[in-house]
Amino acid sequence: MELRHLRYFVAVAEEKNFTRAAARLHIAQPPLSRQIQQLEEDLGVALIEKGSRPLRLTEAGQFLLAHAKPLLDQVRELRAMTQRVGKLERTLSIGFVASTLYGQLPEIVRRYRERYPQVEVTLHEMTTVEQLKALKEGRIDVGFGRLKSEDPSIRRILLREERMMVAMSPGHRLAEREGSVRLTELVHERLLVYPKAPRPSFADQVLAVFSEANLAPDQVTEVRELQIAIGLVAAGQGISIVPQSVQGMHHRNVVYRDLEDKHAFSPILFSVRHMDRSPELENLLATVYTIYDDLGIPYERETL
Image 1 (tube, helix red, strand yellow):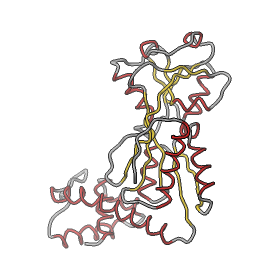
Image 2 (cartoon, rainbow, N blue to C red):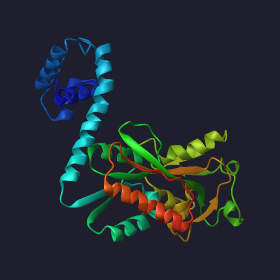
Image 3 (tube, helix red, strand yellow):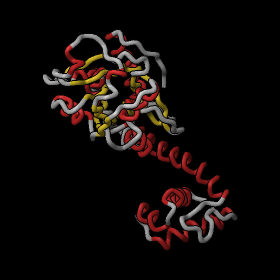
Image 4 (cartoon, rainbow, N blue to C red):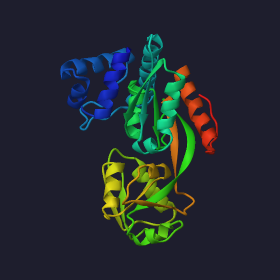
């Protein structure tokens, strides 16, 4: 049994179709079918129920799939780390969700570059879901995201919990008073959530805050990204719930108010490949904590 056999088998199992799996693997279907047949002959068991439409795995096939996927993730992780270690030039590729760009991320990157000028740093905007895929494929080395999810090949360090706020136009009835806003005052508003895809995302975190308070917004409109949501808020087309750091996106037609609800927080997560303990990542995490200390931002320190 070779790694390519496992890779082919996982593609067939996930696609539930040999034609789609062959297209995904960029090979012809007959060779793919032969590879799966060779794998079954090598193991001495059937992995796919004969004649099933759509394709169904046998009990042995389900067992193999459950163990093959994390094994292939580890191989990709090992490949990416070995390539980075072998390079003479030190590099650090960072994925980030848009909202972190209005918080401390620019200062983190600036200070890191200042302290470690020998490391080439690149930045890539992507959702948390996209970051997890990019980490496993070796396209980025670390992600700053907001989504809590379980993946044994990815390690997540909670940097801090950031308070959510309500963004609204200056003429909105709730903008005319000072102080915080209650969720109960927002259920009849047109709520703009982002991003529209991929899901789950920050949009689901916002809706979960309402759900935990036993509330449901009357009108929910999904938009592609944060900047569109803020633009529509400025145009008086609704309100949006955003992380506190988004106040850094100054717009003369948008005001922000605190949310009173105790659940109205969004995590900021530092995500890396599970086995990755490179000096570049350790130094980046240390830089984050140094800036939090300087700014008096509460957090719980972890190590890689």
